Length: 435
Image (cartoon, rainbow, N blue to C red; front, side):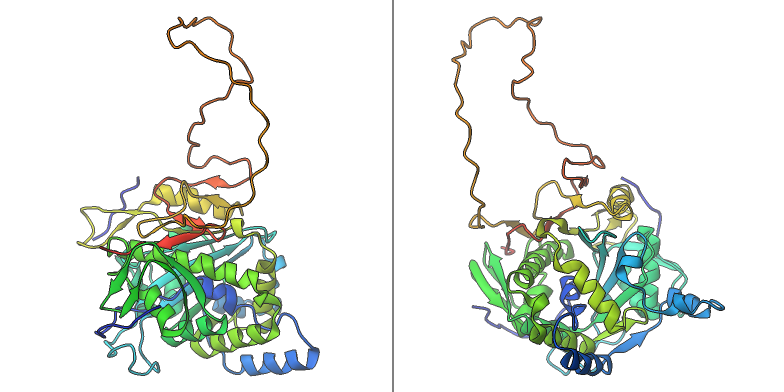
């Protein structure tokens, strides 16, 4: 471990809510704009969506635009043309600006209380989504407008906007991130409505008076304010920490991806248009992402991806004396294994699906098992002496050993360290309430 140096749903009592907890998988739907439909209708929809888009320039955007004689560098690239795949950052802002008074008073400032990196492999066979805990203490680099000090990662947005958060994650991950988006409260609500709600499994009672979330054990379909409340609840799940909230959010995310794949959302023009409109009206997009062509190409790269190759993980962290109370330090050694796999376009595999606030769903669908070959049992005399020089039967079963972090599984996935928690979109999990 590396030690860095550095200083259904029922609404209850409504207090000033904690910062917004948007989700990375919203991006999987937001980028699916107008992929399929009639030409004239698609053209109108593209125009209608495009006129709602708000944009912001990243440092890399400005550098590309300033390159002399290289107009292609500033144009939105095709996904298949990007060497090494796609890296896209989704930021959830706690700003109440223009969001009405339903989320409490505007406390001033703007924090990125959700920071999620989406990586799509160059061959479009796998995707990895990394959640960065808001309380992760990191070096915020010099940014246009601020930065240049050590602090929780969720301060980066207030230092220099979306561009500063991108620079921070680039420094932390070693990756180049050409695409980014910022989403606020209303965007989460409208997008969950656009897909018709998301089924969420709860294994133990969730009762959080801070967000007004009350969910009894079982499965509930959440949309609108109920979906937002579930994604925001921290006190109601796991150990009450932001790390627990991330694992609970992954329950929602994996179910959202399964919902999109199962009901053909990516081939339903009406749903695509609704998602795109919700995204454009409630998101700020970086220059190179704010293009219908780019968003469509990202959507199509995800369309046929196997659910078991879409993996959600939390950036690894640990408690340390050098960080303030309640904050966590980055485990850079474990993170190096994760990002080496991402850089190599390899899928990743967690030790066991789940986390602080999520467990495997005991009622998950089970694929029919292949009939086992008959086995002839040979009785063994436990009192018989064991000959140490006896030949070893090459066909005898071998006790499996745990694979080393960084090793490659038979399916080509990289084995992650045990403290990198998460799950795939194919894993059915349930959120665990905080008792």
